Image (cartoon, rainbow, N blue to C red; front, side, top):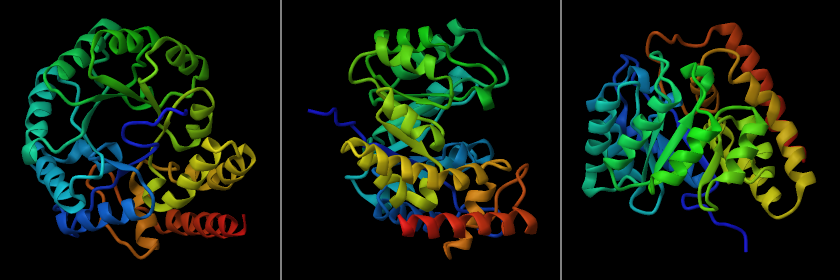
Length: 304
């Protein structure tokens, strides 16, 4: 019997809606959360990088978490992004978030400490202290492209072996050899999610469970169909969807995420407001190019 991931296979890192003055738009966040679940997402990552976590205060983040909890109820898996590059602050914030709404958050996600470039032992202790401060499962987020430092496979394996509630990894690293090493040396219930949409099928092929998605904000049905086709053994159908989605996946990252994801939602008649500085809104040229790629992608999906 195939392993069933505890929170599903398609988890989208939802964008954070803002009003035109840059303040949080909590009612719109609730509408977006419901929309994403209706479109096939199994669960949500709230206030990850796609949710502009670097420019949202701790109080605002708690307000956002509570608003999404109220919107989706008790049955939708919610993972709250809590980590930053200070261990003590991350521990305290993790405890605060896990107490919201009577402990409704299902899991937390903690990113590799950025900017201070810790050695592997520092990363290990950082993640361990966060996990030991809470009771919920912890998703370790490895993204060397943003944090500069890669979490080595040996460090991830140590964390999976030593810390009972470190139960998942978001691996935004395209080194498949590292992925294979992690899969081969971690417990069967240690869940590895692709951290980039384009790595979804390679991740599944090597024993991963799914993806923490960006494109799931605008194309969840196609991503869901692709994953389900692969899990059902229909690799040809999965690969066809994957190849169709690739141009849009790449287009969304031609400037800093989530600038174009937010513009894409507006183009789909679901505006979610601006981005916060130091990000800037999409230019007219970027919007025109995005619209072209989106239109072609959705047309080709309809033809499959």
